Amino acid sequence: MAHADTHTVPDDHLMAVYSRAPLAFERGQGARLYTDEGEVYLDCLAGIATTGLGHAHPKVVAALKAQADKLWHVSNIFRIPGQEALAKKLTDATFADVVFFTNSGTEAVECALKTARKYHWARGDAARVDVIGFEGAFHGRSYAAVFAAGNPTYVEGFGPALPGYVSLPFGDMAALDAAVGPTTAAIIVEPVQGEGGARALPEADLTGLRALCDERGVLLIYDEIQCGLGRTGKLFAHEWAKDAAPDIMCVAKALGDGFPVGACLATAKAASGMSVGSHGSTYGGNPLAMAVGLAAFEELSRPETLENVREISGYFNQQLTGLKDRNPDVIAEVRGKGLLIGLQLIPNNRAFMAAARDERLLIAGGGDNCVRLLPSLLFTVAEVREAIEKLERTCERMRQAAAA
Image (cartoon, rainbow, N blue to C red):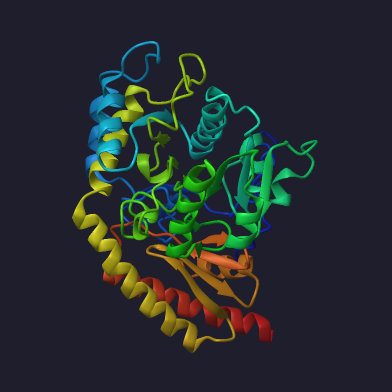
């Protein structure tokens, strides 16, 4: 195969923390990326579920250009009207009463973890510090976020384990019931795991989580950084379940359509411990980010956008099931929810990703030997058909490689 995932572009001036594919793009439009050599790739990666409206969406580009001519950054020591406007849109559309703006999903998770612990401390219950998460989770790369997820690969070599974090098997509600106790502050969960292999928590389990947290006085944190903002066909993935709203929710990725924008949403009760000086951000919520976030959110939350996700994901899933049936030696299972799609593979997933790139198709990796398909929420039927054709040829490449 022409592209090997172990290839690292030589550059002595970059820290060697990425295993980069040997590709560089100069521009994008919709669901396509273009190299400076004129090669065209169908993008089912979307910056890892980040360019939710595709590349160079005209309304988002226009908002960026208009704001860039006026004001980029001031400081959170001043009012920022764009924050007030986007916070109102987010709270009007969700369970939340208040919002803290960040630059990334990781920072939104940090805010959520601090908010949960501070809530109990402010109520005189300082012993409640434990945060329960689930195996296969991904909550970001900061010190607290990696321990909240508990993935051994991401915590190895970074010193002693951060206390107060408990990891349980994904979806094991009995283990969760037994683990929640008088020192538990919060439960953090992705309604649909992304990096963990596109695994959706059953809707009944989300409802059960809410009931358990209410019963035990524990806060429920949803990480909807990847699965939220329309990716499952509702504005947020937990909305598919009944009576399952969280106390705190982390969002990012698609909120800026590729521009760094994140947010931590909370009820007034959950955020009641967060007082002046207890948290902050230099860049979070600056005027440029808020202009982009407002434009992106307005498009992501449109009923037509969400309806497109439901229709296209249903068609995509149907076509992928047929693909699996035709290629049982390559594809073991089709997973996920909406346009957060996982293919569990029989051959190595990294080799499959490289073979897909040779077919000019971009896909993401994932845990449990999965690849993820995370296209723009504006993906079309024609683009689904094109993706299926490329995946079909990728499966054939894998068969030929195995026979060689």
